[in-house]
Length: 90
Length: 220
Length: 281
Image (cartoon, rainbow over all chains, first blue to last red; front, side, top):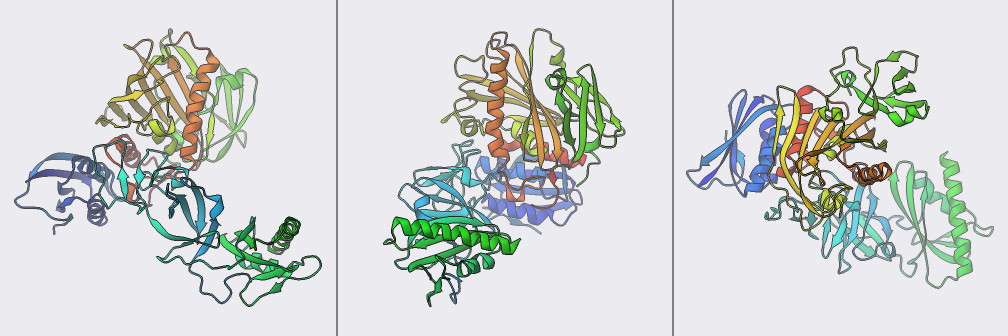
C-alpha cells in the first residue's frame, strides 16, 4: 500500500524526539513507524486519512522544546505490508 | 464541620443543579482542576477538563448543540463521551477516537452537582435538607470556612451539630457543602429543608454572611 | 524569561492621536515602566530613571526600542500610498501573551465562530490548503493563497465575498494582513497589528489599517475593527496556558493551523521567547 514518508532534518539529537513523535502518531491514530537515520535526520512513514497525515506533519515540524526542525520533506512511501499501529522502529 | 464528617469524600460540590439549565455550560473548580460542566439537550450532565485539546481554549466558553459541546474558538465538537466528533475546518474528516476532551465523573444528588477526579463521583445525600439557600465565596481555607458555621451564633445561640454532620440553626436544619477552590478561597453551598419559610431563610442567609465575616477575619 | 531577543525590536507605545491631544502616556514595555510625551513630530519616550529611549513616529504610532542595537523597524510599503485612508484604531489591552495576540491575528479558522456574520459564518467553515513559508532572504513568515468566505469582509463590503488573504510577520510582535479590498478587487486592503508587550502575560494590541475606503466615516472604521478585536479578546484571555507553547504536545494543530505552527517554529529558531513557554507544557 502507498503511504507517506516524512523526513525531518535539523537539530534532532535530543532523546525526547522519538517518544514525542510516537505519542503524536498514536494521538492521531495513524499507522506506521519512526526511526533515526543519523544524528540530524529522522524518517517517518505514515498511513491514514490525509488531514491526519497533514496534522502529523504540522506537529512534527515543531516537535518537542529541545529539537529544532530545519526542513521537513514529504514523499510517497510504499509499504510492503500493512504497517500496523504507529511505533518506533529501532 | 458540616456534611461529610467521618465520610471518606471522593467528590466535591461544584455547583447547584438549578443553576445549570439544559444546553448550557458553566465553569467550575474541583480539587484545583479547572472544569467545564455542561448539560446536553436531554438534561444529561457532563464535567470535563476546561481545555479544548486543539488550541487550549476554555471549553466553558463553548456552546451546546444537541448532545455535543463545541469549542467557541474553532468550533470543534465533542460527543458526550468526550470524543471529538467534528472539526469544522476539515469537514470531510472523521476524527479518530484518540482525539478527545478529558472527562471527569459527575453526578447530581440533593440538588447539587458533584464531581470526582476518580471514576466514581458519589456525592452526599443530604436527605430532606436539599433546598438551596445560598452560594457564597469565602476568602479563606476550607477548614476555617467550615468551622466558622459552628462558631457563628444564630439568634444568640450557637448551632447544634448533628451526628450526620448537619447543623441546626435556630431550629432550622442546614447542610454546609464546601469546595476548596484554592488554599485561600472556598466556595460554599448552603442547603436547608423545603419547609423553611421566607423569613427564616432571610435570617439564615444573614447568618451565612456573618459566618463569612468570622471566617475571613480569622484568615486575615 | 529572557528579553535578550525582544529588547532589540521596535514597539508601539502610544498612537498619534494621544500625543496630538497633548496626553502624557504612562505605560510599560517588557515589564518596565515608560513615559511617552512630546508631540507627534517630536515624541519623547523615557524610562523610570529618566533615560531617553529612541522614539519615532511610523504608521500613525509612536515606536520605541529599549535595546542597544535595534533591528530595523518593519517596512510597510503601502504606508506611502497617498490614496489610501490610514486608520489607527486605538489600543485594546489584553491579558495574554503578546505572541498569542499575534498568533490569533494569523488565524482564519475561528472567523465563523468568533466573528460570526462578519468575517465568517457557518456552514462556510472549511479551510482550503494554503502556503506558509519562512522567507529566508527577509527573515519573515508569509502565508499566502488563502481564500475564505466572508459575510462582511470590511465596512465597505455590501455583500458576502470570497476574500483572499496574505499574512506577513516581519517581527515577532508585528503582523500585516493583505486582504481583498471589496470596492477595489484588484487591490489589497492592509490591516496590521502592532503588539506592545506590557509583560509576558499582558499586552496592548494596536490595529492599524491602510484602506481604499473614502466613504465610510473614520469613527465607523475604528468601531468595526475595535469590535472584531474585542471578540478576539474573549478568546485570548481564556487560552491555557497563558504563554504561547513552542512545544505543541498538549495541542492538536491541523493543516489549517499551519501559520501558527510556522510562526512558532520561527520564534523558536530565533530565540524570540519573551511571552513563550519554552518547556513542555
